[in-house]
Image: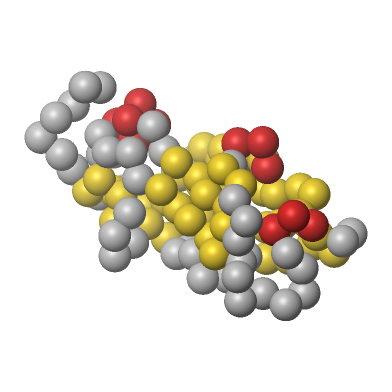
Amino acid sequence: MTDNVLVRGTTPSLIVDFSDITDFTVSEITSAAFIIKRREETVEFGLSDLIISENTLAYHWTQEQTLAYKAGEFLSLDFHVVANGERYKVRGIPEHVRVANTYKNEVM
């Protein structure tokens, strides 16, 4: 995902780097909610849906997911984590992402 644009049929990633956070570490995160809203649909992903590394949490879209989006529509993104019993809104991710078209309309 570049410049807040998600291209249909690709497999982009949203990677959140927590290395500059002093309130908690990634290993202290016990819960997460990554929410994608589009039109009337809201989809929520939890900690088990994310890839966890030492300092990052990442979400990877599949081709099927991105092909389901319509070119020109906007996705709203929201991300929260719970660490040490406190809920934190994750800053630094785009609030809105525009979906761009592709010439390929099927999974490769």
